Picture 1 (cartoon, rainbow, N blue to C red):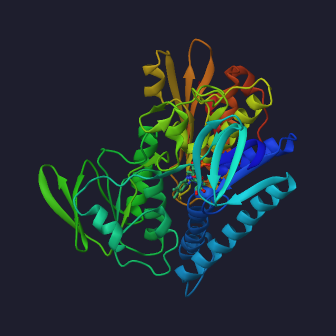
Picture 2 (picture 1 turned 30 degrees about the horizontal axis):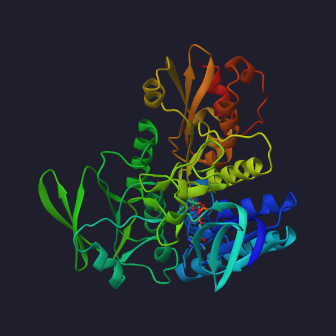
Picture 3 (picture 1 turned 60 degrees about the vertical axis):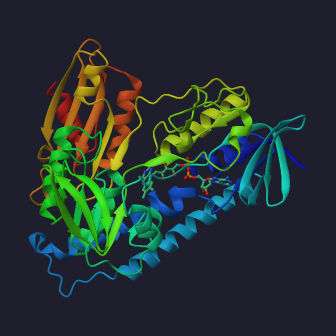
Length: 455
Ligand SMILES: Cc1cc2nc3c(=O)[nH]c(=O)nc-3n(C[C@H](O)[C@H](O)[C@H](O)COP(=O)(O)OP(=O)(O)OC[C@H]3O[C@@H](n4cnc5c(N)ncnc54)[C@H](O)[C@@H]3O)c2cc1C
């Protein structure tokens, strides 16, 4: 049996950062990973999707460069080369995680882990025929795509006609027609990539809007932009079946069909909690995810669950912060997780970035709020760089505290601006305080400053 201070199950952002931080603090750590270090995020999620989207953005810019006085002829995109570049980026990042594990003396075991339970040696996990034990166990097994019981869907997955994020990010040939089931962030990013490189794409979404909880006005602008790129949307439509080269759906009570030669199923993800013995610990669960407190500890003292496995906010940066909070708790340091100011981003063109409450969600919490909105055209840089842009910046203000509780942006660079907005929301400082902060000129982030003076 191999004994460590901390055992980590899963090597994605939650697991590898927990291992890195615990190792850096002098703890002996064993990290068990069954597929590849970096998890979903590095191998089949955040990074690969952004690599693809960046190639598509370059292509789109080249195609529409005339408006900027630049003529480009014979512009082409080679999807196989885009994927090969993506693989190179992934490889570099995965090996970087490996290097960090070595630098922090983390014992990495590449095998599937199974939790046996608690013994006198601590929590015991078996992997690759060996037993590993520790007094602290961090569960970081991530999530998997939801494949609902729609007739024909599972058969479609088995035959390769229906793809999940894993397969679609590694396709080496381009589908002739793609149907995306689900108009959430992952579905939209993939729909956007394939539409930008010239594939006819139809997105079927059950709700009457796209991008899930994104602020309504922002998601409406996004929808308009996607439609201009040629993506077809079937909103308020329910998928009823998957057939040969088609997806059946219901629209206004009528049964319809969308032809496709590939389908992406992206209707959500669920915590990965099955088949690895966590039931042997008696860990409490809620709606299929592991229940945790503000220290990411479960009902079993010494067992933590970080990242997608706790189902709270399935984002890599949430997993990172949760990993830090869990490790700090193990180290006896005061820390607690807060979920009020976690940014979310859609990395298409245009980008969408949000943090905190929408007007609706703030009102549901009983806050007395008002919102202000300014056009991105208030920014000189935005006007100089974006042709016919319709971006906006929206602030949600708590009238009683005169503080910002939400920031919602659509337009270029917003993914890079949102961390500043997250600080505004997280700090709870007053609007007057932020009015005294100097923003660089000319930048797109100046629209936030403009909006502050509209309050
Ligand atoms: C297409 C796509 C795009 C995304 N884009 C973004 C984005 O832009 N920004 C963002 O913040 N988030 C994004 N996400 C979400 C992000 O990838 C996840 O929130 C993040 O990876 C969660 O980290 P994690 O450590 O909890 O789990 P994961 O990254 O899923 O890692 C869990 C790891 O545990 C391993 N594992 C599971 N069970 C066992 C076992 N029994 N034994 C050993 N190992 C095991 C798995 O192999 C996996 O490597 C995206 C997701 C997808 C699918």
